[in-house]
Image (cartoon, rainbow, N blue to C red; front, top):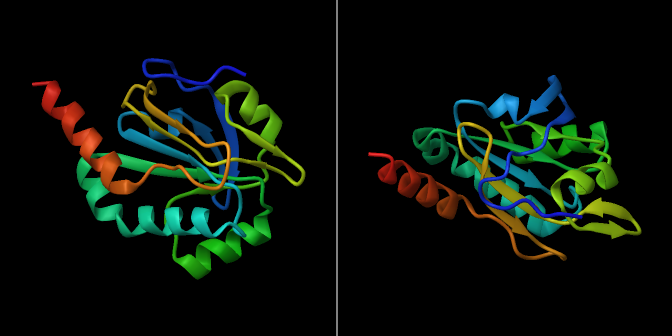
Length: 158
């Protein structure tokens, strides 16, 4: 298991969302990307994180960032969660935790199987700017930090 570090290319992942297949990092190309791995709809920390990214959508859009989340939960659970929480960004469901962990270095809970919280901020070319790995319930990206980082990166490009 090799964890992704700044400068690494984000690996190709083909994900299933309510709108069909989504290919990462291509779906985020040209924009800064935020990729959030969540434990599941049952996790209060994960739900709070996804709701906070939804609330921050205007700031993220202004910063030029798109958000994608993923988890092992099924389609019905994901549909119910997104409706209840008014999540507008894609949440991929039914991911193969072992396969995703193999290419990203994310921690996997053995039983029940799910990905531990992991977050990435990608540059517009699909390279990792920052990676945040958690081995348990806490420790995750927050929207204000992401917006601040993107603003700083942009300020360094002039």
